[in-house]
Length: 368
Image: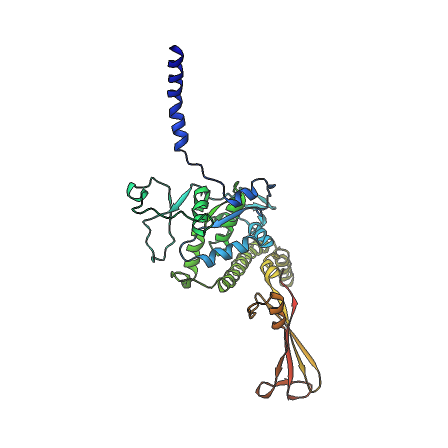
């Protein structure tokens, strides 16, 4: 009899733990998590596979940020600029204070259901809370959700987390004014320093800065990703060059104070020029180095067969895409020759007049 009592009491004591285990919901790992869980971890951030939260119409922005992040040379250049010697409070290349990222929220989050659509503001994140009873039980039995659908993958990513949300700009730590470049740098650094290889990052601050800088992006309209890519590259170039110029001016001002008062005006000018050359920032052209190519415009006069050439830089190529064709064939059509005749004759300097000519564009140097 005592044996049955002990068995009953032990079974009764285990029931709360068993019930607790039943209540726990185990979120299965996503396919990308299974792919990278056994891979060797890299320190440069190239093994981080993070999705970007969509604020309803920011697909063009997210796709561009993904492409730029996985351009290794661009990502490393963004993270490493400005150099430590350009930061305020730096002496002889050594930082007096170690600037850190502002606090980053990594709480699992979902989109706030109270957010209004069409307000022009990014949809805020909200902490997960309890689901109301009315919303928990649908009136009609819903069809089982396809696990391979985009919506199912999005829900799985949000449930798995973590979600990174840079709450405050870190431009002051870089010695820069807040700009698209500093907002992009915040995103890239938050992903790189995260211990998790997968997750969701919220580019909310980047979108806010974008809307502040350009009213074209303040509406709820979708934008062309290609045009947006060109706009961001030009903004990055301008932001980096402006910061480099201001850093040079401050350094040149301090260098000019070291010139002896007894020196002549010519010697003073030479000293200032030397100081300017020594403090010239040479690493602001990395955007051009990575994305800029060179075209050669070739025109051949059909009368004297003289060939004139002119080189032109480019950041993008407008190529006609045809159905059932490869990129190679599209580039070949881009470089096809064009006849200049009738009203479009070419003025040949050798012949001294308008002549029929053959014109073509060749790619002299491809971007890196």
